[in-house]
Length: 161
Image (cartoon, rainbow, N blue to C red; front, side):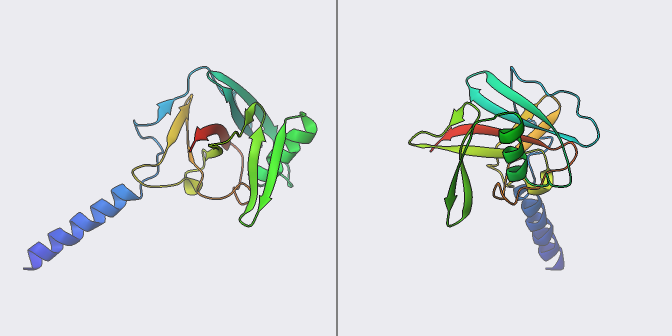
């Protein structure tokens, strides 16, 4: 009886671990072709925007004390690099309708991915990609709460509903 209970507990724990595993270093991560990241120095991060099929823009960012969230970084790029950004305020916070050449049309949304495993969505269906040797996973928090730090890579792409 105890052995059966022990085996059931171990099986349940193993199932939970598999369910809540991030997409980091999984072989299922699709490699994004046609885009590469520059070497990031200490105090730098990168923003990658998929403008269209096999068309990517990469923006290295020198972080400052004010640039601690994805929202702050995007606003910084809009001001310093003239990056197109279209925000919409909602009851749930800011919603990004467009960045660079990625502009939301009817039936689409702008997906946000991060290289920070602690902020990625988890579970068997979590979407993730590889950009060079960096894995980015679907962000589990909103753009205003998504923290950035040295080495962070943010990736934006349009997704059909």
